[in-house]
Length: 383
Image (cartoon, helix red, strand yellow):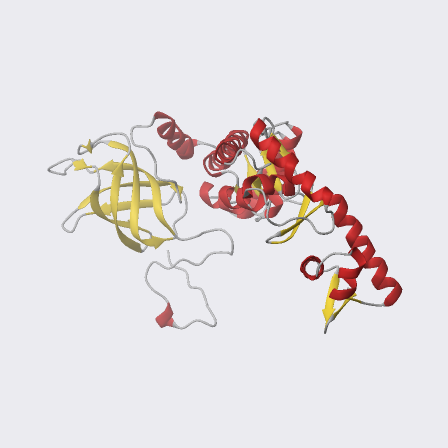
């Protein structure tokens, strides 16, 4: 049987044997495949693990290596599970037939069971059971297995891993969500970019967050929590699914979120007596000279960052830190001055607080950065 397709806007020199025409969002080239393989009866010798092969499916071929997953060698006439690692990407469909060849002979063949799999542990019984499910299971079984392996992941990634067209996978995912076999992280209708997760995937994500936060608190015990951006980077989640995941973890009592940070629910910052004494001495020095605090009694960075994170002090320059109450009073007075006179200079700010130019300038530059004021020449005005 032969068919022809008329492709516009592409030259014949851009096409090659084995290329595939498909709808957007379904197939994606892959360099790894899980397969069920049978070795030809007439081969003179068994096939051993990691054998280099030429992999053929449809009209395409690519060199690769054969990783046997359930034995060290496969004798003529035997069948079993393997993973093929290709040197060039192909775009097959789950269930496609294939053959493998050496330079001189055909070695065997079988069916493609899974696309874009992770590298499997050899002789791992759950993996082998999963491959049996992938070969014989229903589309819903396949989608759930893909979610178990990869979640949290974009729904389109799970669909490709299961070898399902997107519209079929979308309908199945909606059913699975209604049956609590899966859920999506983030709000809105399910689409290809929705992050989907299975119950086992959620358990893994929760365990990963738990481990990351415990390690962070162990290394930096005086920090209130891990910066949210750092956690986002470590987990590899986009903002929407991350926000939904953290919201759920908070509801489950696993974490606490603060101003730009996330901490483990069990984490408590505790100062030893010497640290507590240094903190109280430092705060006392700030209150004694609220508008001109001493800059030669600065705390070590970890303790100072703790006070900043707790909102007890505000750092406006490298060597200028105000107690939070004094800082707010100063900001209010500067705003009132500008509102009544239209502007303020460094000299006027200095006189307003009976301090020195050093503190007035540091405060005004800080307010510029915070977009409270804007510098025009030697004056500041409100933004």
